[in-house]
Length: 403
Ligand code: ARG
Image (cartoon, rainbow, N blue to C red):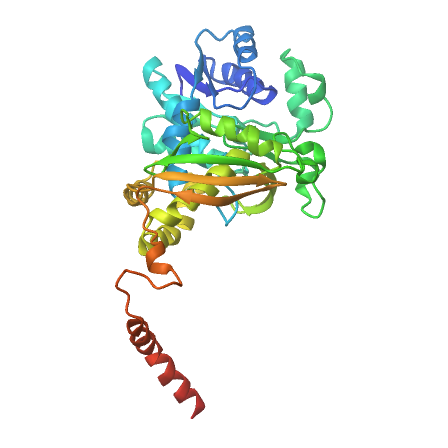
């Protein structure tokens, strides 16, 4: 094993990363710096500091990344209307490159040549962390304890904790808990009974949305303002990037908006089933499509829709910091210059539906589309020729088929 002087660990303060912290200290016999990011996961972060201190960590970093997360990661992704496999809003996928960026930044600052993460050897997250570190600083080594140590079961993990006097909370003593990942964009829940896709998810897996059946009988109306493709206000009130999803998670969650029960294809090769709750993200995506519907040119909009699955797959697979993602981003960002205005939605029993949209940059022309006589020069005979020419090849084709 190469001698390392310092390792920066992505540390949540939970049981698994506490064990990883101890294992790194023992295995490498070097200083471990812990990095805990506040991504709006809704958990107290001070306990992480106390736990790291107890494990003898001298350099403890707890950083509030909420604004950066939404401004530089979630919003650029939203501009693309990104959905993986048609449905997943990529809430975990988009958080990993940000964490990796800060791990690398701290490593450079403290002179560490390695970073470590607590993602397992079967998931997507290990790829997202490590591909991002590769792209940001190829000199930094990545340690993934889950792929290296001999702990192979939950039992062995708990035994390791007991042996090293790492406190195991009572709810973590029995069988493995759900695997949960939460941030300002979503809560993702996997594992346990969810591993059987034939089994209906129990109600208690849902944490930030009510069952649409129990949602209020009165709908709620909400207006989102956009400037150049990014949301900037709710009901006329200007908000910072991080405040927007925070506000909309509350409103959407009360109306049961943004639940998803999905079987997806992991990059590593297997299918997995997860429950996602993305109330604010679902409202923002629907609203963004609403404002684009009146401000984007048809061909521009369709080109965006063509590249979207490719762009979403890059994020899912961990290629955020890759040249092809940046190239697609440049295209997407350029399309957003006039995507400004306001969209009003109705939240009701699990749905978020656009009910009106306005923009000073609108391309919509009532005069052009109206059934009534219009002032704009539109010659109906042009449509006749347009159809005749578009039908030319179809007439040839049909005639040949009849022969
Ligand atoms: N399957 C999702 C993804 O790859 C979520 C992964 C993290 N979630 C979790 N519950 N551990 O993006």
